[in-house]
Image (tube, rainbow, N blue to C red):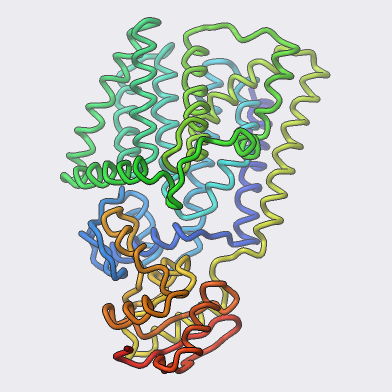
Length: 478
C-alpha cells in the first residue's frame, strides 16, 4: 500500500510539473482566456452576474455558465492575474486524483497507477488546461459524474447519488460542451444499460433531473438563460459548422496527435485477448468509445474537444490490457506511451514558445489608451486582440461578445481593414476613431495602407511601441 502511494505521489509530481512549468515559463494564453477574464472583472466590479458585458460594442445577453467567472472574479478584480492562469491546471490535476481513487477501489492499485500515469501525460488535457477557460472545470465535473455512476455499479450508496446530483450542477454551471456531453452520454448509457443492468439507468435517470432542478434553484433561475443561450449556440453550429463556416468530420491523424498512445492499441490487441466484459468494463467501453466516435463524426464545431471526455475510460482499458502482458512487452509499451506523449508535448511547447498573445508593447498601448480621456472607443487590428483589449482597457471595444445573436452582426464589419468604403462606414456609424494596429499583421498592414493612401482619411499616430501603433482618424470621414 505504502509503495503504491509513493509511486502515485511520483505520478502526481510528474503530472504537476508538465502542467505548471510550461505555464510558468511560457505564460501561455488564448483569446478565450481574456473573454473569461473580462466577464470576471465585470462580475467583481458590479458584485453580481451581469445581464450583458459592457466592454463590447455589439452586446448580447450574458448567458455564459458563470461558475468559472465567479471563482476567478476576486483574483481578477484585485488584479492578481497569475492565480487565474492555473485554474484549469487545478481542475485537470484533480481529475488525476479522482481517477486514481475510484479505479484503485474497483480494479486495484496497479491498474489505478498505470491509468493515472497515462492520463497525467496525455497531451490534449495538458494543453487544454493552460488557458483560463471553463473546459477543464467542465470535464472534471463530467468525470466526477461518470466515475460516480461507474463506482455505483459495485458500491451503490445514497452518498454517491448526492455526489452525482451536485456534479450535474457543476457541469451545467461551468461549461456548455460538458453539458451537452453529459446529456449525450447519459442517454446513450441509459438506453444500453436498460438491457444490461437497469440499476445503472435508474441511477443516471435519477441524477439528471434532480441535478437540473438543483441547478435552477441554486442559480436562482439563471440556468434558464444558460439553456437558451446553449440552444442558440447549437443552432448556430448546426447551421454554420465551426466559426470559420466549415463542417468537417474529425481527422484521425489529429486525434492521434492529441492522444498519441491510442496508436498502441493494435499492438496491445495483437499480444492480448480483449478484457473481460464485466459491468464495469462494459461501462468504460461505452463511455470511451462514445467520445472517440463523436470526436470523428461530429462536424458542427470543434469535434476534437470531445476527446478529452473519453481519456479516463480509454486509459483504464489500455492499462487493464497491458498489465496482462509479459513484463518485457509491458515495459516497452509504457516506455512508448511516455516517449510519444513527451515528444508531442515538446513539439507543442517548441512551436508555441514565441506565440504569446500579450506583449509589453501591447500592454503599453493599452495603458496609453486608458490614460487618454479623449479616447472612448477603440478597434484593435487584428481582431483576435479585441478580447485582451476588453480586459486591459476601460474603453468600449469594436467587437462582439460570443453570443450568436450579435456575433453575426459584428462579423459583417470585420472586413474594414481591407475595404476603404467599409472603413468609412464603420468610423461614421460607430464613431470608431482610434485604432490599435499590429503593423506585422496582414490586416494591420492593409488598414494602415488604406489610411495612408486615402486623401480623405486624415490620421495621426498618437503612440507607437514595437510593432504596435495607435492611430487616430479625424471625424466625419466621407
